[in-house]
Length: 601
View (cartoon, rainbow, N blue to C red):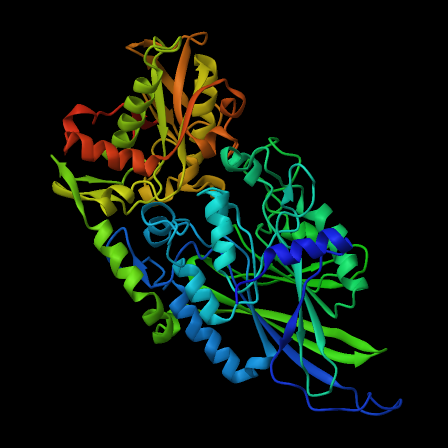
C-alpha cells in the first residue's frame, strides 16, 4: 500500500521523534537464544543495500529524443528495467531478505515519459494515471528514496501526488515547511531486517536533499518550503537515529561529493556536501550520493570526530549503474555493530531488461512514443548542435530567436519595451538536430531537455561584458599556432556544456589564446562598441537567473518579467503557431573563437 505520509508526519508532530518504524524485511526469524557466553563464536550477519540515483524518468533503455535505443559513446544502457535485472541477481545471490533497495533522488523529471505524465496527461488529474516511475519502483521493492531538486520542477502538487502513489517514503530531512519549520517530508525511515540469530538489524535511512532548490525552483517553493544545509540537519538527526537503536545508519543524499557549489554565494549552504557530511557528522556508516551525475564506485572519508571511515558511492545517472553496499555486522554488547563496509557499482549494460517491468509500463511508453513523433511543423534547412559548443550555429540561434520574440511580446506596452532584448542559450545536447522538412515534438524538445522556464532581467553593458567573460572560461587556453582539435577546446576545468552561454543580439569575439577574464574582444551592439552604461533586457532561463552556474550579476538583476511555461514548450508552441521554421530569418554568425585576433575557423 502507498506510504502514509500524513500518518508519519502526524507522529512526528505528536512525538517530536520524527520516526516511522516499518515492517520487518523477510520471513519470520527462527527462534534463537541470546548470544552465548564469552569465548563462543561471534554472531555475524551480512547485509546488502543497493542504491540508484538520478534516474530522471528512465524506465526503458530508450531515447525519446532520437526515437531509438539509448546510445552514448561509452556504450551505456539506461532505465529501471535494466536495473531491475541487476537487483534481482543480487537478491538471488544474497537472499532477498538480506537486501534493501533505496534511491537518492531526481526521479520524476528528465525524459519525455516523465514530462508526459506531469504535463500532457498529468497524474494530478481527477482520474490521473499512476506515474510510470512509481509503477516500476513499487514493483522493484524500493524501501525509500530521497527527494531530489528536480522533483520540484513540475510544482509541489505533482510531487505530492507522486509521493502518494509510491509504496515507499520520499525522504528529505532538510526540506522544512516554511511556516512551521517542521519536516515537509519524512526525514528518515527505519527498516527492521530479520537475521538467522533472532535479533533484527535496525537499518536507518536518512534522506537529505539539495539546498539549491530554494533558488532553482524558487517559483514553486518560495513561501512554502525552506531548505537548510545537509550538514546541520544530518547533525540533528543522526544522533536521534542512534539513540533510537539504529544499528546501521545510511544517508541517501541528493548532493554530490565534491564540496563545491554552482550557485556561488547565493546561499550559505554547500550544494555538493555529501563528503562534508561524512567528515563532520559522526555516526554514519555509508552515504548513497546523488545529484552530480558522476560515477563513484567507492570513496572513503574519515570522520574527524570519531575517526571512523564512512563509505560513499554514487552510481551513474539514468539507471546506468547500481551501487551495492555490503555490510558485515557482528553481535556484541547487546546490539549489532558494523564491522566493515564496502561498495561497488554494477553496469546495467551487462544485462537484459526485466520483462516484468517492461510489461508493467509498456502501454504508457507506447503512448509517449506516439506523442513525441507528432508532426508540428516544417523547417527550411537542417540544423545540428554538433558544433554548437565552439561555433555560432543556427540551432542555438533558433532558441535565442524564440526567447527574444517571447520576451519582446511580453514587454510590449511596458516601461521596458524600448530596451534592446538579448538572449542566452546553451548547447544542452550535442546530438540535438532538426531536419529539413517535417518536424516533430521530439526533435524540438531535444533542444531543451531541462524544465527551465523563461525570465527577463535588466543588465548594463558592463554587466553583459562580465557575463560573457565568465562564460568564456569554458574554453581551454590555446596559443596561436598550436594544433586545433575541436574535441579538446571546450569544458575547461570540467565546466559542462550547459554552463556555457552564447548571447544573441550582440557581436563579439572570444580570444582563447588569452587568459580567462580577458577574452572578450570587439564587443559591439548595432555595429558600435558596447556602451558600458547602456541597459539591456536579457532573456534568461530560471536556472541561470537564480544563480545556477554562478554567472555574475544576473541573479541580482531586476526582473521585469517571468512565466511558468517550460522553454521547451514555448519553442514547441512557437513552431505550431508559425508552421515553418524559416532558418534564414535568424541564422547569423555573431560570435566566433579567435587566437590573438585571428579567427579559429
